[in-house]
Image (cartoon, rainbow, N blue to C red):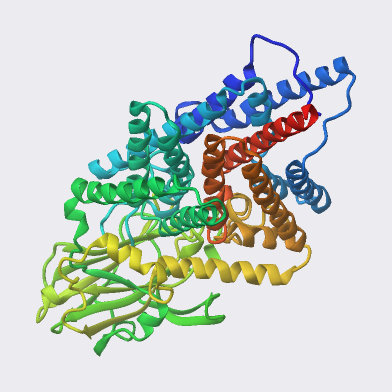
Length: 637
């Protein structure tokens, strides 16, 4: 039996829930405009107040009605077991700040799973309104992202990105095509959040009774699809398409619902319109340009299409500056071996400018081949803030500095993907036949802190390459190329970053296969408390294994099993086509989260976490309501 809340004209639960859902996508804006700690923890404070109010009302109702606690549903039992395991590990591990951050990141907005049904029991008319509100928020966010794409500038520069890479812009790897993120921390976070809204927008197109409402829902869906495209997050492209296809195929197979046909047709039309919108907004970005700098994965670096090595700079005497040659070794989790290379050691000058200059004669089709890295000894946040590597070129005998031909900031202290050799080829063919000076410069990071900026230039070589190596294919569509690189696991650098993360995660799990390494040992929590040893699993499933071992995997698996089981039961309990359609939208959004969770730690994203528990709470409410109707019907018959 469900306890009925005490009567009240004022419902802070509903008002607070609406504020939470409306403001959460703009958390970074609130955080910057509001002084700490309020700007940082307003959402946790609001949720805590709502939970306290809800708990007090239901406790009062239990005492007044003299009833026991309501029966716990299997879905709620799965949530409680998952939460219980997290609390148990936190208590047993006694890992202090590390465990506290790990518990927070793992729990985050889980209480919404109980708060949402509590609100809907008192205001069942808000069932569809919550869906409409969610889609409206998604449409507005998508509009902001598309505006950012059109203007070609970040509208709300991400402090996290600036810290990791030294600047707020994000581009497709190897191209100057902007990836948008609007008011989120990254393009991937924005794409994962928008993908949850898409099935709900499609369902609103079907369920809305008025033509203007259908058109509005269609516009929101169009904006959401277009914005997901220009985030260029390939994983969520695959996850969303696969989830929508699987759900539609399952329902067609089981129920033979004809209304899925117009939904599928509408989705195809919307995707075509979104593609057209993309090319209309930025037609110039659809074509690839010639690249003067190419970053290479280790295999391509070792076996680059070279026709010759003309000069080994590390074996030459510099024209200016002192050459300090050292040998550094970095472990490569993908190959399982140490990659040892000679390096030219250089660090920024405490005062003034310091550089190392070599004079070279550029051959036809000449290029500069090298790798950069910061010494592993300084991969901790208290030792500097990263460094930027620059190469300037000037004609021999010229007193001027010349022009910049290479500039790259790396920060292994906050960005685990920079904890390896970054390999490059720089095109020198415009200076073929000339004698030039190459100036190698290491500068301090964004804050100007030059302490511990121990930079290394590896294997500096003047080489000859294939003449067309730096020329992009004519009329190559960046979107098509980027989508095709999804399956390139040997040459694509972003895929290699993910492989790197998975290998690190599997190695960490094998070190403690049953009990795990403890809360806060991976992801956001680890980067905040122990950045020197931190890594990101790039998988929610692998995160559960690494931190909680087999019990964590079982608890997460049981939670998803009960979500699927509850959804399946609810679909058969629903007594109207509209109810089934709504449930289909909720389950498709949840399926997107489930699929993406295998290749991305998506529940660490605040917005994804909040809307995930919102959807689970709505699923629990629908199951509860339809089960009560069924029991009531059986009682009267």
